[in-house]
Length: 129
Image 1: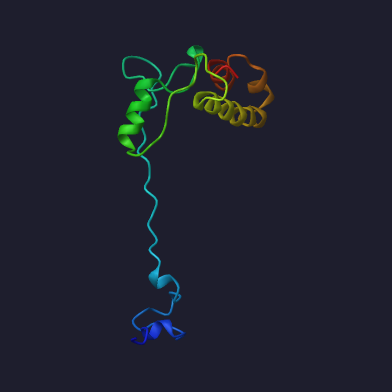
Image 2 (image 1 turned 90 degrees about the horizontal axis):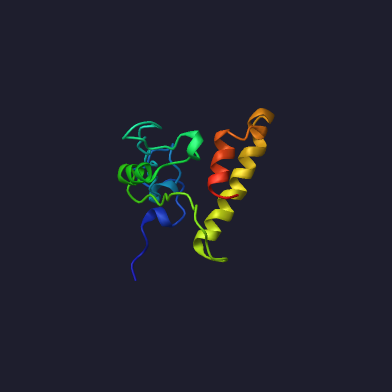
């Protein structure tokens, strides 16, 4: 059996590696996270990607498609607005969204919390929270 390379024997610094890099980092690849592409934040007209507040806030189906096209691998989905069976995936998504949005609502101002037409309250109403 051959001897392992010198850097594996506990040498303080592998050969050819700058002193600013630790021996453990030589074998680690650090990949920068891809920045997501923004889609147009329109709420009016034919190209609307988001719903106006009065119709429940949130993204439209077209907006979700645009986001998924701009960001391959995205798992974004539209709101769960219909009737769902207890214990189904859709019911789990709704329960999760309602819990998250309750936290958002709690952190917003009293004016926003108490306004039935605020975006967060309209979206929660649309999701049937």
